[in-house]
Image (cartoon, rainbow, N blue to C red; front, side):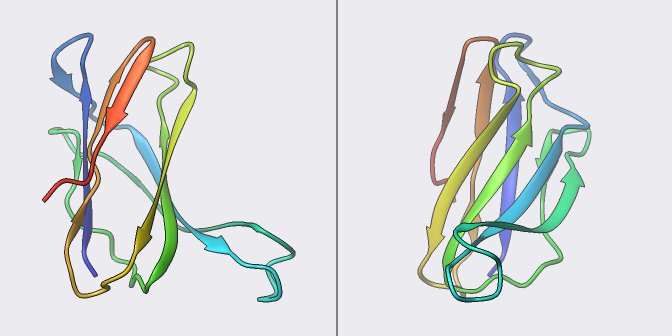
Length: 110
């Protein structure tokens, strides 16, 4: 499974360079994770184009999320968590984020 993301600052019309993004997987009850929570797999900053082109972390089927630290772009949304389910680990997944001070949007990209 390959995963990528792209973050755009809609207020400035520019890529969100240098944003910290955490990749997490859901920790199910009974797997030693202490309940129903999240385990951080990796943490990376976006490049100059606001992208993380590849995570060097193997991903399996299951529920994961990207947590974007948007504190420099929005006082209202200090972070944005986008959860998604991987059903086909062999398929590429792109999860873009468009952020502005009082709104954000995301979708499953290609």
